Length: 118
Image 1: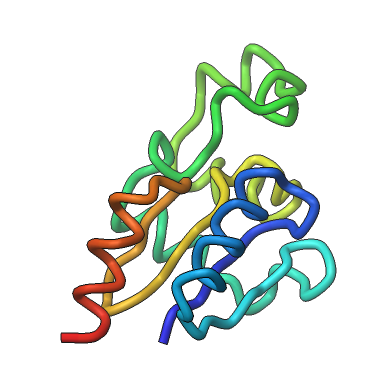
Image 2 (image 1 turned 120 degrees about the vertical axis):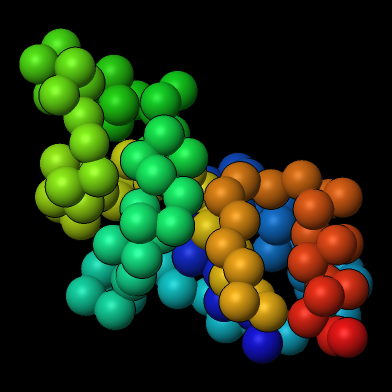
């Protein structure tokens, strides 16, 4: 089963959801804003992938951070900030077949789908 995390009005999340639906892939969608952050495994993502891959450094939320926060960024600070401001997280986050991916690329989604069905 695939779990897709994100924010429903995010264009990239919309593309990912459209791709999954077009390809007949069942998935669970967890909206950071509507469903909350309590059950979101941000700490696991940070441990496995590092803050550099989890946080979206091109986002408005990243630009709103202080220079000091950006300079001192590590997994612990990223966990605190991402939990408080989920728009810092690169979207969508896809979990399937024991793998976590950040962002949306059709080729990667196809590979993930293959792994999930084998």
